Structure formats: C-alpha cells, structure tokens
Image (cartoon, rainbow, N blue to C red):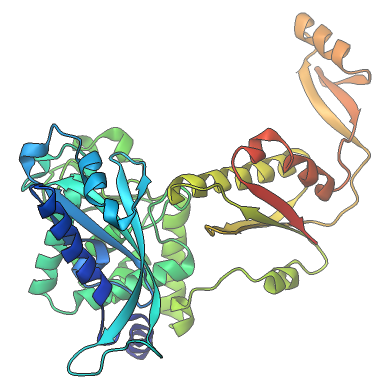
Length: 432
C-alpha cells in the first residue's frame, strides 16, 4: 500500500515548482488596492495557501480581506473597481466575487533554471478573487465567505504540528476526484477540500481515514475540537440531515459536511473497502467517460448518449441545471416503462455527457393506467369520461391506452425539445 501511495503522490504533487503568476497577481492586486486607498489585503487561499494543491490544478482562490470598518459597505463593488485593469468577470454569489484568467509559467526553484520562452510550461490559471471581511472570530462574520481565511489558518496550524499531512490530503483529494465524490457543488454533493482537510487531520493520515471509512455506519459524527456536547441537538436540524456531520473547528455552529449526499457517502465507503482489499494506482487515476467503453458496457442493450452544451455562468448553477435535465429524462424513461439499467453523466463547461443504458425489449402496444376506486363515484365518472377503454379489477378502475412511445429514442427526442430541458441547457443532441 505504501508503494501505491508513493507512486500516486509522485504523479499528483507539483515537483519543486511554483506558480509564479499567482504570487505576482497577489502583489499586483495589493498595489491596485493601495492606489484606490482601500484598507484591504490580498492573500492566497484554498489549496494553494495550504500547500495541498495538486499538479495541473489551475484554479486558485485569492481572498481580499477588507478592514472590518468596511462591514456596512459594498466591498464587492469596491473590489470590482480596483480590479478593472485586470478585466475581471463578475460572478454572482452569496457575496459577488470575480474571476480573472491569466497565462502563467511554472519555474523551477532551488537554483534550477526558470522555464521561459521556448519550452516553457505554460497554461491558464483561473483566479477566483473573493472579497471578505478581516475577522478573528466566526461571530464577526457578515457572510459565510468571511470564514474562509480562518479555515486556511486552522489547517496550516495543524500541518505545522504534523508535517506530512498536506501530502496525505493530496492523496485524499485525488482519490475522491477519481471515484467521483469530490466537490461540494450542488450538482456533485460530495466531499469538499475543506471536509477532506478535517477528516485527514482528525484521523491522522489518508490510510487511517480509509480504514475508518470502511467501517463507518450510516451516520458519522466528528467534533475535532470537542466544541459541542451533543452535536445533533445543538446544530441546526436542517444541517444535520447529511450522513456525515463534522462540527466545524472554527465555526462550531456549522456542519462542515452538510452538503454530502447519502449516495456519495456510501460510494466513498465502498471504494475505501475496495482499495483496502486490493490497493492499486488506478484508484488515483481520473477516468473520463469513454464512448467506446460505454458501448462495450451496453453490449446488446440500448445506449442513449447525449452531448450537452451547458448554459453560460456560474459553474455550480449551470452544472446543477445539467443534472436536473439528466434526472428529468431518467424519470420520464422510467415513467414510460423503459428499464434503465445504468445512467450517468459527466459535467464539462464546454460539453457535458449524459448517458442511459436501457434494456432492449419489445414493448406492448398498450399501457394500463391506474384509476380511482370504483366506489368513489365522482372520480370514477371523470376517469371514465377521460379514458374510452376502462375496466374494473378488485374494486379499482383501470384504463387501457395506446402506448405513446414504442422506443426510448422516440421519447428522448421529444424530451430534449421540451421547455424543461431547453431552459436548463444551451444545446443537447443525441449521438448516433
């Protein structure tokens, strides 16, 4: 197992590299803030600040911490004006923030030559620049984002106490990305980076986390700093419906794992067991949906494959809309009595994939619709007026109707043209 961890870490950990553009961008933003006379400071956030960033992870959070005297002012608007030379894109959220995309070069350190010009390692960094208030205690927070720098400080303190935890968290993040349970977004409802930080800190290592997850029950409660005597009673009931409850160490009135769904929780448990039974580097390799593999899996059954162009906008919002379209189509397939053997989807900003594997069978030309009990005279009369072929069985009315769709393809062709789907995606087409 240790050999698998070492090999995996070698593949996912940036090797003696730093994103020079990130540090330069922080300096540039601080200069812009000073020019505007704003009492605020830009600092690194997220995995970049904590030292848990993965190789090829090109999204970097930056927090602009405004002096608390600005708590009644529009700090998003102030930040937007200061950032104008960077041509930021406004993103709406609980507090509006900004995105800036910049080309960058990774440079070698420890005396090695910088990569530049020909042969440089270039890509595009997406900076999410988030305005927050500078606070020392969660009770001072005006918006949930004000807490984020405190989470970074807590993690860094724990990493200093136990060197090596950052790499353990890298393994946990990559494992969760590979099995499809990483991210707190509404269309994922999985394990956020913050939750994985807390789990690894609590258990002491990624291996220990897997060993515990393999024997987790249906409900797990963790309180790292022993803030609450009875978390289930003391936390907001609406925030304790998730199978995993983690009392946030810097905000004890919050369940840090509230967004995790039962499905993703159970999947994490089962994959932890699989890995422990047979450790493999494959558990750390992110696999994209392969049309060839889906066709092979479907075999003689029906494979319905949809290519979807999401709407433009906030990734969480547009991803959730793709998910809603996916769920709507699956629900209608089942409603029309087509047997869905497997269904899934993969989100992409430019193109998402939705697929359904269905049982290949000849459908009856008619369907039977369930009506009201025959004794309910008014309802029975309306049912008979609506359906020409009605019969009674064991005191209940039934109607025989001509089946509207004989194949799932016919149904899906209509579904992707109806308003429910069209309002949630920019474009969708059936792949042949």
